Length: 350
Ligand SMILES: Cc1cc2nc3c(=O)[nH]c(=O)nc-3n(C[C@H](O)[C@H](O)[C@H](O)COP(=O)(O)O)c2cc1C
Image (cartoon, rainbow, N blue to C red; front, side, top):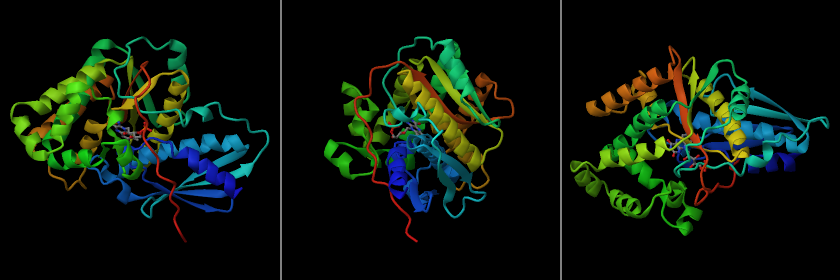
């Protein structure tokens, strides 16, 4: 069984993660895979209280469940009560020849984040129903926004994140530290390859200049950060729908479940050749600045921008007293230009 469990891990790590941080590690004992969160792998300001890592690990666990079926294994996921020691879940496998291959299995490696413009074609009702039916958690809610006016408003609000990234040194430095500029560098360094950002002509030149915080700061004086945000808003508007997940409570388990259910939805969309891009900056920053445990200082202009953006998002989505945990744009598009890489799975030694 150990060999098969290793194979399950090798496929499951094709889960998405913030900045491709891949914050997981594993232990195999007998018929179980233990899944750990490695907090050092994602030190981004966006990863407040490990919420972004929990989404990534939730997606990984969903992949494990799906991959288990390729070996006719039943998979029982036991989520830990307390994540403080890094252990998130124990996945226990048992052979059962009545278990059939989950049809989503073949999309695990095919799924990708696509940052190209999408066509705004309507998504067929049957697909929307399939997405709604795939959510197994009663405390995680999915909203599918297809109203064009609301998509445009949400696109503008999400893009405010890009302005903040170019005006906050820590966010700026973290972003540029996680970009790999050549294929060779991409093979050895953590992060994601510049080509996955799908920048074009003048955008590539501007992006290379913005890498230097000094130049970035000078260009901000003539409005580059707002210009980039506006450019991104135009891209985000080119989507068929915006998916948002809301949760009753802001805690790690809610983000873990968000990761599990959103991964299932991502794989279903991949089956229909519909792409997704997470749009998470404002949401994660909002949860950071509004927590008593936040120690990071943002300037007042950014605090206002984050709070008003999140509050307008909530109004448009009619979330009531629920909290937004993640948002995605979706649509039909050409294939991404490049794919992100995965490190070899890491194992925790006894
Ligand atoms: C919690 C989380 C947050 C993310 N936020 C963003 C985002 O705001 N914008 C974006 O373009 N991609 C975002 N991503 C996508 C990751 O960058 C992507 O999953 C990673 O680079 C691996 O690439 P892949 O999804 O193509 O496999 C996010 C992914 C996760 C899991």
